[in-house]
Image (cartoon, rainbow, N blue to C red):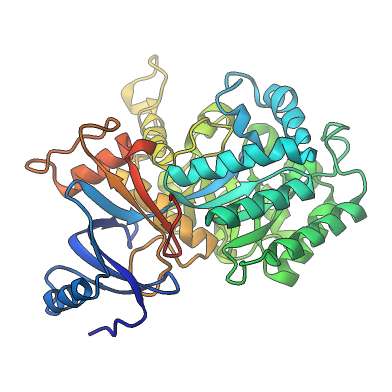
Length: 456
Ligand SMILES: [Zn+2]
C-alpha cells in the first residue's frame, strides 16, 4: 500500500479518461492520490483489494475530497493551436476569404501588441478564459513582438496554466505587410534567442510549466534563411516548434512553386521537426508527408471548425487516426470563434461526418462522400486529452500513476448550462458523449494543473 506522508490530497470521483485511442475508461468512485509535487502518486479502482483501507486512511488524515454525484473528473483539455492576440477578433469576419481576413483584421490587430498596455488585459483574459473552459495545456502563437510575448508567458505562469508560447517569426517582405514584418533577420533571431532565455528564466519556471516555442508563422511568411536558422535552434536547444502546415490550396501551391516541395519536407529539411513539433491544420498531406511526420514523431493540431472556414478541403481525420500519427485538437482562435476544446471535439466529429456523407445533392449517395470517414466522440475525446498531450510529449492527458495531475471536474445539474444527465438510463458512454456535445464553461467546476487548483 502507498505511504501517505507525501500525499497532498486525494480525490474520490467518477472518472473518465482515454488511455487508449478509440476507447475510454470509466471508473466509478476512482481514488486518485496526488503528491506534493502535483503528480499522481497512486490510483485505486473501487474493486481494488486495498481500496477500503486506503480510503479510510485518507479520511483519517483529512486528505480526501469526495466529488458529488453528477460531477465527473477527467483529464484537462489540450489546445494545440491558439492565436492569443487574435482573441478580440474571435467571431469577426469569418465569412471573408483568408487573405482579406488576415489583411483587414489579423495583421493590424497583432501589430498593436507592441503596446504592452494594450496587450496585458487581453492576454490576461484569453488565458483565464481558456483555463475556465478546462484547457489545462495551451499552445499559443503570440505576435512578432518579444516583450508582449514574454508578458503572455508570464501571465500563463502567474495563472498556473501549462503553456507553450511562441514569438512569431515572419521576415519575408514579399508576403508580410510592411508594417508587420521582421526587416532584419539578425535582430529577429537575437530577439528569438532572448525570448527563449527569458521564458526559461521566469521565476518559478524551474520545472518548465511554461515553455518557449519556435514559431515560424508559415512557409510563405518566412525566408529560407529564417527557416534554417530557426531549425538550428530547435535542434540545438531541443525546443518545441509550432507552425501552420499545408492549410490551404494557396499555401500548398506556394510551397510547390517556391521550393518544389511540400510544407512537411520544407520544415524537415530546415531542421524544424522533432518529437514535440506541432503542425497546425495539415490538410493537404501526401502519404510521404504522413510517413515523415511519423518518422520525426512530430504531431498534428487538428482545428476542424477553422478548416471549414479557411482550409478549402476536409481533414483526413479518419486516415490520420488510423495511420498512428500523433494528433490532437486546436481551437485556432480566431480562425474559429470558440475557446472550448469540447467544441473542437464536437466539430471534429461533425467535420468527419460531412466528409463521409458528402454535400452535393446532385450526386448519387454512393458518389457523394468518402466512405468510412467518420470518427467517434470517443476518438475526439482522446484527441482532446491523451492525443494532444502526446503531440507535446507532455506527461499529462491520462489519469494514471506517474503523470502530472492536470484535470478538470465537469458538473451536470439542472441549474447550470444545458448539460443534462439521467443516471438511470444514461450509460457512461452516453454521459461522456453528452459532455462533449453539451458542456459549457459553466459546467467546468474545478481545474487543476500540476496538482494546483487554478480556478480559485
Ligand atoms: Zn493558426
